[in-house]
Length: 233
Image 1 (cartoon, helix red, strand yellow):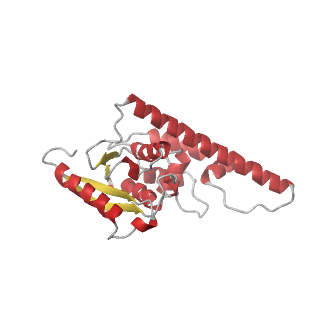
Image 2 (cartoon, one colour):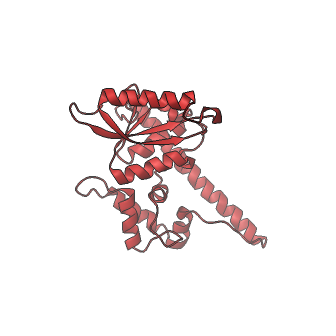
Image 3 (cartoon, one colour):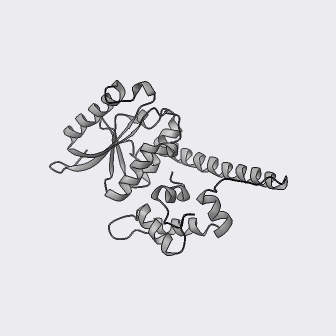
C-alpha cells in the first residue's frame, strides 16, 4: 500500500487465458481492470500504464509473453516500481511459471500487489522464498539444457554435411565468441549500486556497448536481451 498522503505510480498487468475473453466487453478483462482500479483508488496508487497478454495460457512461459515483456521494458525506463494484478493467477496458474514472473520483477526491485492488497513479492515467508529459488534454478537448468541440446543437434547436422541455419541466442554467441565475457561484465555491472539504486538493464546495455559488446545488428542490447543474458528472464 502507498504511504499515507503520498500518491505512488503503478502499472497494471492483465492476462486473459482464452480468445473468448479478449476485448473491452468481455468479462475477464473487464473484471480484472475494475478490481485493480478499485484497489488503486483505496490504496492511493496512480495508474500510469496497462499491459495485457490476451488469449495467453497460464502455462505459457513468462519470457514468451509480449505484454509482460513490454511491462519489463517500461519499468526499466520510467522508474515505476509497483505492479498491480487482480491475483497471482494472472501471472500463471502453474506455480513455477508464476514464481518466475514474480522473480523477474523482484530482481528489478519491483513490488507486485494484488487487488486484495497481498504483496506477492513479500520475502518474509521462507516457503515462498524457497519456491522462488527452486523456480529460478529449474529455469536456469532448462535454459542450459536447451542450449546444450541445440548445440548437439547443430554439430550432428554439420557432421552430416547439412548447412545449419538459424540465429544463435546472445547466450550462445557470448559463450562461443567471447568466452562468457559479456555475462561476466553484465553481472559485475548489475551488482554495482550507484547512488540512486541498482543500475537498470538499459544502463547495463549502454555500458556493454561502450565495452564493445553489442547485438548482432550492431546496436546496444535491448533491456530484455540483457535480462536473458543475466538469466533474469
